[in-house]
Amino acid sequence: MPKMNEKQLIEAIRELKEIKPRQEWVSLVKSQILPNKTWSIGNILTYLPQINEQRRLAYAFATLVFIIVGMFGFAQYTVPGDLLFSVKKITESQDPFQIAYNRSEELVQILKENKTQNIAPAVGEFKASISGAAKDLVLSLTQDPKVTPNKKSLKEIAAEVKKIQDNQKQLETLGIDISKTEEAKEYDNALASLVKNQIEDLEKSTLAESQQKALIQAKDLYSQQKYSDALEEILLINN
Image (cartoon, rainbow, N blue to C red; front, side, top):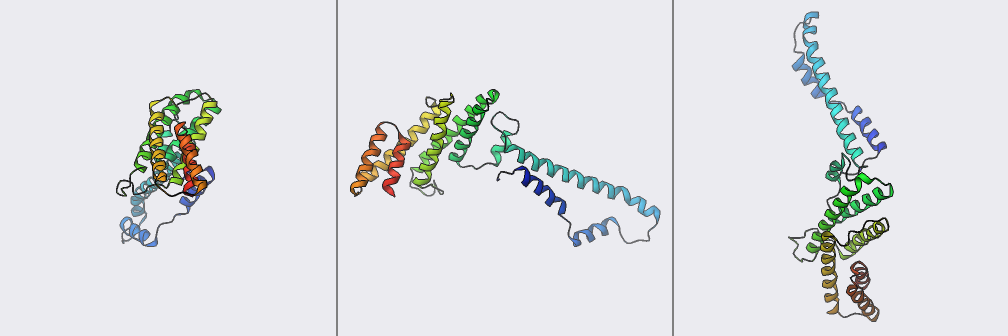
C-alpha cells in the first residue's frame, strides 16, 4: 500500500462522503423496509426505529473506515518502537533490500533526532532486515527461474547495496556500527559470494583492455573485502 500524506487522507475522506448508493439498491431497500400498504402516522412511527438503526450502522461504518484510513496514514510516519510501526511494516514493500534500506533510514532519523527510546528496537529491526537481504542475495545466485521468478538484475542489486552501504557509513558516524554482528557477517558473506561468482564468470570471458583493468580493480577490491565497490567495478565491465 503506497504512503498516504495528510492531503491525500483528507481527499480520500471527501471521496467517501460523495459515494451514493445505486438507485436499484435504494428501491430494493425501500421495498423491504417500506412495503406497499396504506400509510398512517402509526405505520410510519413503527418503521422509524428501523431507519434510525440503519442510519446508526452507516455512521458506525463510516467512522470505522475513517479510523482505518487514518491509522494506515499515520503509521507511515512511525519508526521502530512506535505503537503503529507494525502497521507500517504490513503496508510497505516486501522487497528485502527496500526493507533493509527503510530500516537504515529510520535508524539514521532516530539517531539524528536523539529518540533514545527508539534506538534499541530500530537496531534490532535493521539487523533483521540485513539478514533478509542476505537471503535474497543468496537466492540471486541461482539460475533456476522457479526459485527466483522475480530475479533482480546485477544493476538493481548494485544500486540497492550501494544505498544501504551509504546509510551504514552514516550510522557509523552517528555511533552505530553493526558490521561485527552475525547479521552483518551473513550479509557480507552473501555479497562476497555474489562478487566472486561474477569475477569467475568474467575471467572466462574475452574482455577488452579497459574491461581487463576494471576486472583487476574488482579483484583487488574483493580481496580488501570491499564487496560493494567491487560490484560497481563489475557493473562497469558488464555495461
